[in-house]
Length: 469
Image (cartoon, rainbow, N blue to C red; front, side, top):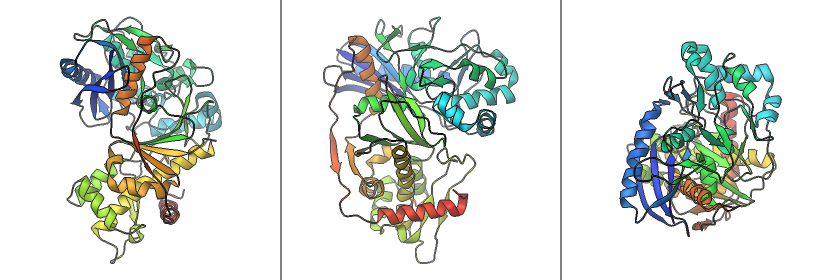
């Protein structure tokens, strides 16, 4: 049986045809998205159609099921005709930071964490809807339904039926859902939107068949419920207790499987649900792979060149520390921050030290996230390092010392799309548990590197000096 997994990320749509028996990828395609923090959802649909058409043409057989993993939190606000009232605000749009603060002042961080698993920051959907109500009230008046990016695409695949749907994993990132009860909290949505009450998608179980596809090339295929990108990646990797994922894409995400919901009133750990009916506490940063690409551009090199430069420097980068908040930051919650390089002297201003400071700065943020998961009770037995930046030799070499645990680097793959394909196969099979697909990896150990603690201490001191935290 062949199934189709779709990853609609910030930057592109990836489509994989996968053999449901063993998880082998037999065809793939990709279509780009425009840059920006607000996007017309029609762009995602066009990219999805193009990628699906290409991958179906390459497929050795008929597609029996499809599912979508999409970027979390994006606000897709639709009118009564099912058309967007404005461009979608993406997870990395920070304009709603004041609305996040207002929500915390009104309800209290502890109460919100207990009710929703989250303490609001600008990334979450509820803050974006509050911004819409305050800054574009005419648009807010037209909102009849609110979807997330993966909801929108699944709904399109099904021919825009009367009832939309979503899963508990992506719903848990909105700020108006309860991981404890598994239900929407519409009163929080209504309050955020100034008394308006848009319709919300129907919540379905992780292995549900949501609909049947109407898109040419995959007509009649089972549509799985879909999920958020981090939940799909966790499903694709087949996480076990003690596994922690560090995903280094446009954003950085650190997450681990859990049997109980979490409620972190500091707001560092988001208490998400996963795509299996369990939980996925997660820490997210706005800055990850772009830290490396931006530094490479400044040094007039590519990512491989940056890696060579970084490995030519000593641990600690000659005393340089980079706070890599190039796009503002979500963890720690510094939406207006910019990047800061500290410790400059005439002796250490070399391309090698700057390159290593970029790698160490990005990874120190991830190491802080791992510690935050530990503080919620998560077991950290090993780290699985994935995402575009995980392919860097410098990242692979430096990460174990900073993380303080063994690091596995699975073979590069589109794990969000693989997770979506696994969910599609699960929905088609009707089984109680998802299929088991092997994930190949390479073991990297901590060894005798004792420099990690010193690097992290210097990073923490720089953060305290600049931001007081």
